[in-house]
Image (cartoon, rainbow, N blue to C red; front, top):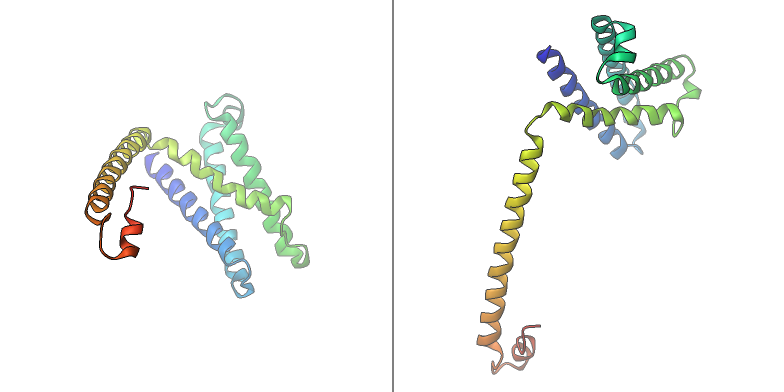
Length: 172
């Protein structure tokens, strides 16, 4: 349903922000416990989301016939790797992943954000429109700066103050 997809997209965005925040605070050991708990919550959420999607579509259709079967397989592998990482770090604290394949899987969950973008049908129009507007604005700023440079050079090239005359002696 649309509400379910919106909730999942929101979770993906929040998880992406969490992973980025964790990376920026990676040296601060006092936050590791908080990040671990939040990561467990996201792992649980993604596990439930995967379960509901498989339940709704059927196992065979979900992985073999669905138009997003490759994304579904990717989601399942990443989610299972995160579940494994959660179990390993819960039962063997000294085995917590850091720079391993399991911790990499947690970071790879961020790639789901790209999948969430496909639901924004107008995204390509927005990007093209923004690029065109930015190019027009940059052109306008360049023309104004060029006009001011020519005006300043014409007004100050023969200034009695030698330092000013040297700086504005030519357009370059």
